[in-house]
Length: 418
Ligand SMILES: [Zn+2]
Image: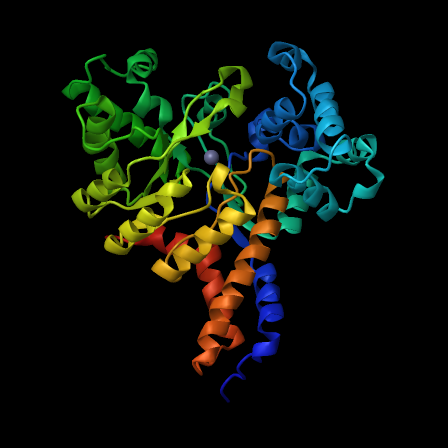
């Protein structure tokens, strides 16, 4: 018997239910599995001192930077709570996110009492909390960001860590690719024959380094974040390392290479992690990469709103380009709304609409709560448009589409051999 189409008057509610029920594969986070110890951040003080909120607290009530940084974390959190939540309404997306997170965890936000929140987090273990957060956010799994140059992280891999299957690795290559003048020395210290001028031996050794870490991490993809002035090709070491090391090794292992483009680093270093900004970048470099390396796969996101439309059009030209996520300063409702509509209209369902970029475990709760609501409503508009043409919309079709957006597109892209 054919499935009954969903009644149009009921469509929006049904879509919201389907989207909420779908477990999500979060393709880019800065979260860590339990064995990485203190690298896994969670709890109210981490939420409140997240760099998005730090930038906002200095605007709302400026204070001496060093004085703020010298405070213990809990005192920094107290200040953020007082200035951004009690002395004015917390309407920014980062502030609202903290409240959504607490509410979804079952805490009473109306009490405005920080110590009750702290007690809640103190009364639980990291492992219990990981389970609780995955359940609350309805997450299938998350992809971490794993940097072999990180001195806290590397020893955990060197010991041969067994990962919880809900945590997958991504091999992050920023220091290697963007700071060769320093990283060649580090490689030498680890026994690689690397030289400042990036000669043939260095290139061979970089490939050996990549092979070692691909074997150790079994990453879902390799990744880098790039500044607005990134150009390809040019005469930089970055360009030749991409062409002669990263792309061939990625191709060999069928690994996508993720490029997150448009971060202007440390425009205000006194803000530390909160000191990075945004700049309009060059989409034609991505076009040249996708055209020049058709047997490589690229996951790409841009930080600047001004690059989004051009990126969508570029993706129409290259099946080896997968557009993903609303990154960082793009991860705000008004922009998610705009970009998601633009992508659906230009690319249909062949994109990955969102990732959380969560740096604190609990943040996945609000990032996905807010995005699920937005994406469900945008999809409802699109299905209503289709229904007006007489096209039958049944629940199983909606479920299939939602599965593509929230995980299957990524999995299929990983296993695809172009
Ligand atoms: Zn990130």
